[in-house]
Length: 241
Image 1 (tube, rainbow, N blue to C red):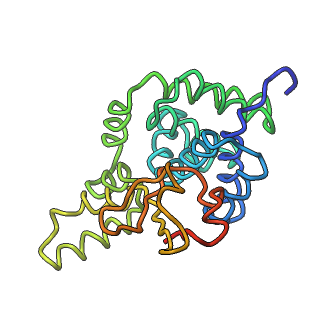
Image 2: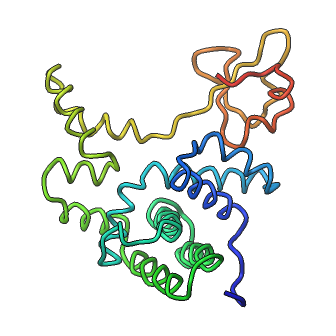
């Protein structure tokens, strides 16, 4: 596929981790830090790669529903490498502020690096179709395509149907059936990274990019990036909780 530019490093890292997860059952949290270091990403690009990777994985079930509607074919018929690039592109189009043309072009570049001309054309067509609708319009389309109330909830919350049903039963048994949507939303919320500055060994001022913790005077909340890149963390004076 000569003549096509390569995808930006942050997106390449995110894509490679997605491929490791879907192709080798790898754990993203174990693979991603090493890929970021190997690519020598800047703090900003490391943050972008992290958001793209985890954000795509978190909502991949929903994104697959969008891809099926945009492609007009079953998800099983899409080659795995192309599917991962599409998921990454859909995430950028529907859940980030990335410019649509950048989301499409960068994702197509990932397919072009390893795929056939047909795969490139397919990915380009699917992503351009997705880009023509807003996030809310796609949610409405996915909702309308669901075959049951639980299937709709599973699709929109990006949870397997059996988990939705199991959680519904568990909540109903406690008289809390109306909390299902809130529980699924909480499960999708990105967890924060908590740090502790060990008393006598580190000061919060050594991590100016971290926010103070509301519960502890020695607690900190990371606002992004790789904690291992912080000297105090590597030296053991600040620990990840």
